[in-house]
Length: 297
Image (cartoon, rainbow, N blue to C red; front, side, top):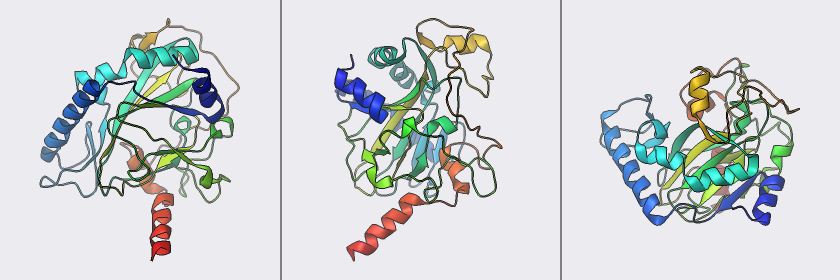
């Protein structure tokens, strides 16, 4: 159950961190499966349907930055995506829950890639905004290892332009023109087994992992049953309804007066947000790191 304080935080700030949702045993199992995937990545030389690799990845030194749709590749990940406690929390928010998809973002010690400021809503607008991502912390999240950074209350604001200089979608906000006070950003910190829930319209991002500790974050996307994707569902209504985790399917999408900006034309670089953001020319977190280094000299 969400406490009144947690409900208020989600509604007002757009995110909440809930400790101890996954047991230590569940976290250990997820870590072990993740280690297997990283070990198997030595056979992969380029991004594919499972792996998104760091540019410095090699067989001698495997460096995975994302496992794509992990729930489709291992039963342990699939169970985590349907964890009863997670479904119950989301059902409290919306009354019904439909699964969308997921990814495992991995910031390895010392080099894990940043993700530029963005709103998830820019990637997959729906008929209403009862959508959220749930992040499962597989490691302790500290200020040093690249935790997710949130701009509180930004889910109440506008949908920012996520298009690049070439006019194509690039999956990142221009921090110089967005009018956002990034000094207000709040890190999502917690022990392994904690989860985050963040609203689909919340502005967020994450810096490079400069620490000596890994930061593995299993993220699943969910929506209310009556929230329908504006860009369609390619697998058909039967598969769409199989994704219902709580409540009943409906053929009556709820239309809410929410701002929408379509992610079209599509990004020049496909495959993941990391690839989309290659075209931005915007490197907020790299610039911030460079400024800190100069200030420390």
